[in-house]
Length: 259
Length: 331
Image 1 (tube, helix red, strand yellow):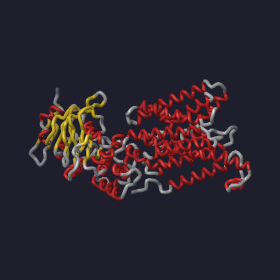
Image 2: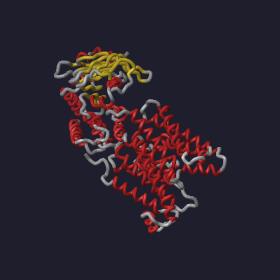
Image 3: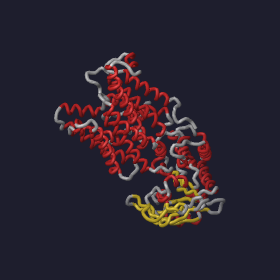
Image 4: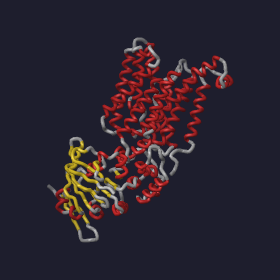
């Protein structure tokens, strides 16, 4: 069980104030979506939650402990991270790449145990990439590679997962698969935090949404309370058709608001 | 789990290294009949054969193995760390700086005072260069800033070396400096072995320890950190390993280029291509390649013995060409 809390958190990237005074508490068992326009500070916020961004003021704590006081390896075992983009610097085999997820659990010179290998296979299967096991990761399509990297994050077996734009490059079927998977992780007791751009997916799957704009947290709550015509106009500068009546809410951006 | 390396890769490399070592003992400018060599190896033999084998060829063979192993390993580790298949020890300026220290010792005549002064100066300048690299690159973990800082340091050291050639008091001094820049294992003694060996052991230990961090860097800096890698410490170990190990190697052999570049490329196709899987094969391959190249320079009939760096540079060209052809999809 992992709880991540930020208190008046501000992060500066160079001279740019990327995150300004964000306070929130993310509890286990939730699928939390972070939404907002490009450059709103979403990725910087989650990087700060992982202890990867230099905090200017305020605090980040994991399970009540300040993140700076937790060792890198301990953070790695508590929070799995799927970074934005699909940077791969060497043409590793898919199986080897996903096995990197077991690294936080290995001693200095030990090898993967059969338990580790079972975790790797399970992660491959859950991300629907078991059939790609023997392929070279850099030779896969963008969507296949995205799922392999998700499997890499799942292989950590951490009680929480932070995923930055896990749906980018995925076809609609696999977008639904990935959101189902994240939801299932949350239902099983994990804290799952994900940056999303698809408001429809955010509304349909997330238990809670954080809406960011220009570094500030402007709304935090249930999807339908956060995604209002007014907030979308104010933050994204768009008009949208919002249908809350069906099995799940539908959100369709209809136009840009001029001015 | 599928094999990380071809099952025969390590045995073949070990065999190749042994063959190279044996060849280095038995082949040379003065032909020695196998009977005389065997006699020496079994503890007897005539005085001339003993002197050639034990005092000339054995230290030369040992240095070939030690220096080659260090260069191969450092190349493999740096390619992984900088995530750049064209990296080798010289990109961080370590070899150039060590060469500058050696050349300085020759230029100012310090080298004549005591045989250990030159290597010690070489190792010291290599450490200073890596320290400067740290200051220049700052806290950023980006490979690009490190490469840029390395180029700055290497260029500065190169300028110092050119200056000493420019101002060298007489042609003999210039020749001596020049031979240091091209690298050679000619006329080396056990003193050189004892200087290089501890440096290379320490350097190699520091580099091999980081294999897993190198693998994690496949996912980029943040991906690696999120897997629990302390990049600041990993970088410190990497830089110290290169400074001490390569500094110690260059201190006895001169700057021998391209071994660190070629060897990882030769062994990589026989592994799963992860940075950690090529470390040990590159160490063995480097030892074998440099020892074989050293046999080559002894056997190629030229008026004066070829310098090792000349031969390894020639071997380096095809590696770049293969890369070029792959980029242009000609191959």
